[in-house]
Length: 168
Image (cartoon, rainbow, N blue to C red; front, side, top):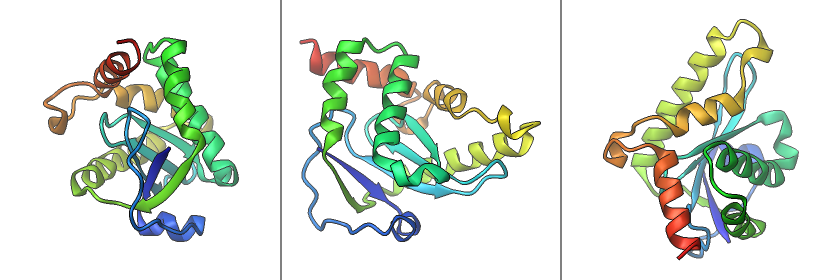
């Protein structure tokens, strides 16, 4: 079980109801914060892990497949940063049950705003829509130093959490 903590804007767009007291996440990457981001290359829904600040994104036109696409994007990113398949399998099994809740961290909302700015910048300067690769941006953001992570990379923190949790 995980919780997608949506902004009000995204909640209205998706038409989902929030649970009042969400269950604690069983997945080691914790809850994921999510928001709707307009860009020149098309609108995007971003997801940010509360524990690691890993970011995945899906185009809004795939919102009808939101939950399977979210799981797919997480698996894809974990593979790109070098997480072993057996560890990915253990983490992703918790993504079959998802609940929606309101956001609870201003710090993560601030991080999401910075990510949104980065996405909008990348979209504006992509020569063609096809040059705007979400996978490349996800990988780039996984190697971004965040002050809130004591200037560590989200990819390093994710691997540390996942390996300590699933291989010990």
